[in-house]
Length: 160
Image (cartoon, rainbow, N blue to C red; front, side):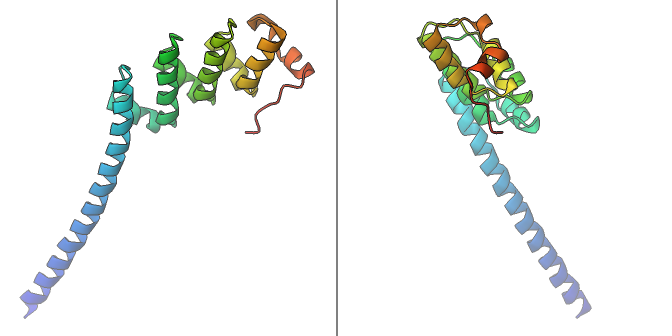
């Protein structure tokens, strides 16, 4: 009789362990498929991004979706950016997707604004899409987009 009670306890413990392991496995599979989908998008766009790199971005506090979508847009627009540039900008607190979108808009308007110029303005808190619009309207070059000029024309700053 004592042996039966121990056997029941062991069976319940094994059942509980299997439930916990099953739940953990389900979370792992869901996370894997999230990154697998992102990796497939990058691969389809011809970008050399590994699953490990996507995992490491998340571990360093970078949103891999934001960086990957920015990289895909930059590659399609022919900006010649590297994944390292976008990751570095994200680590510095910038918004790589906004900077790439602004760089593409600037390129379409014939402006000579580099990624580094726009990334610097983004880090300073300016909305780079609006900066590109102002530069296009006033025919400005990158060296004329000083913080003093942007403050004079009341360029909006990020709320965050």
